[in-house]
Image 1: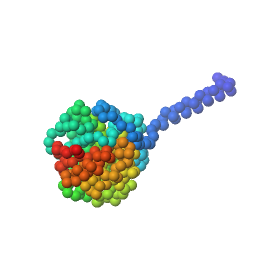
Image 2 (image 1 turned 90 degrees about the horizontal axis):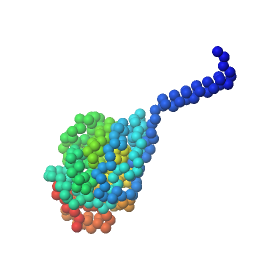
Image 3 (image 1 turned 135 degrees about the vertical axis):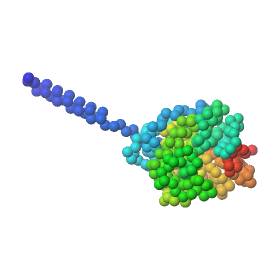
Amino acid sequence: MKFSSQTCFLVALFALIACAEEGRSARPHVPSAGAGGAAGASGNTAGFGASGTTGGGAGGTAGIGGSAGSGGMGSGGMDMVEPPPEGTWWKPAAGLSWQSRFGGGAIDPNLDVDVFDIDWEESADTVEMLHQAGKKVVCYVSVGSWEDWRPDAGDFPESVIGNDYPDWPGEKFVDIRVQELRDVMAKRFDACRDKGFDAVEPDNMDVFSSDSGFDLTRADGVDYAEWMAAACHERSLAIVQKNAPEITDSIASLYDGVLTEDCYADGNWCGDMQPYIDADKPVFACEYDADIFDDACAWGGSRNYSFILKGLDLDGPVTFCP
């Protein structure tokens, strides 16, 4: 059968289009990893009393920690996830009242505070009880240490476990640079999300300034902090900086607040957290020395810092500023 030259041209053209479409459909789609938690820079407040959590779907299948975009981890062959839209996680305001309870004793949902800070191993029922009482709930996670009593202690590769944490038997520092450690932390953030927590408190994120047994630098601390902000925001969780005043200027725009320990008693480095107050984000300041607590309250009251006095065991009793 003979074809005209025009017919042959059309057949060839359609063949080229078909090949192009086939090549496009076979190419994997990789969303940009980009800004991760940069939306945390917003000074918008969430107006306390909003519903408990805003959802737990986004980011749960992030290839465990793979969406490190702003954290400098690069793709490394891991899946990357688009950051959630602005406003899908809690945006706390400066001046909120709070309670921290990790030791023994019952959790009292009737305590007149805005926020409860409790351990990540607490049950979803406890989180829901606090939500029903109108509280926001922060999920305490030690991100810079291995603790031998945790249910996931066996998930930590030996290579990431370093020197003993002074004065805390059964606890050791960890190497925050490696993906295997971040995979463990990502699972903990998943647990916080799945139980309905509103935010994460990443304790020991200042491991880079400790005698960890690893050659960690300030830059490593910033990189880890950026990764955590992105990982939490992908899961619709807020995240508050924990201590680590050395890196505040580098990460405050990504974080939703900060929690300090003895910032007043320890030479008053509380002012290093002023960038959060300036952005109308909370400074949850916990002091352990009763002798200086009134002075801390006098200093922090006019600055909208949220001081409380606790015992070192962090059980139920709490003292608020007058």
